[in-house]
Length: 125
Image (cartoon, rainbow, N blue to C red; front, side, top):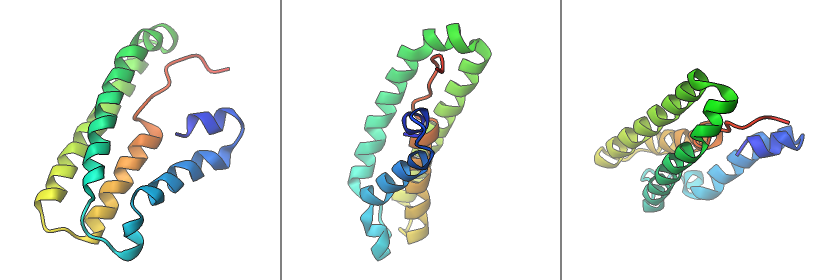
């Protein structure tokens, strides 16, 4: 979400796009909603599958262009963050819902989506 606007020189877009998507995804936060919507579970499932497929497809380019060490570290960080999101999601769903938990859970989901979910292993122009 941040790479494409940044590549086109739209630095503000690199910040605004993830923020706009965050607020569009969960507008109930403006009303103080304390429960994570079910669509967030669907989002997490879909991006988990997409992230694993992305890493598998991008792996050869990452090794060739960025090196094995970098590729391993970025993939490990992305997968660690993803595992943490799943743990957080389960904990938030099983505990007493609060606005703070809902806000933090969604903030971390969209931060991961913006920065680590689909790492770019190719060659920069």
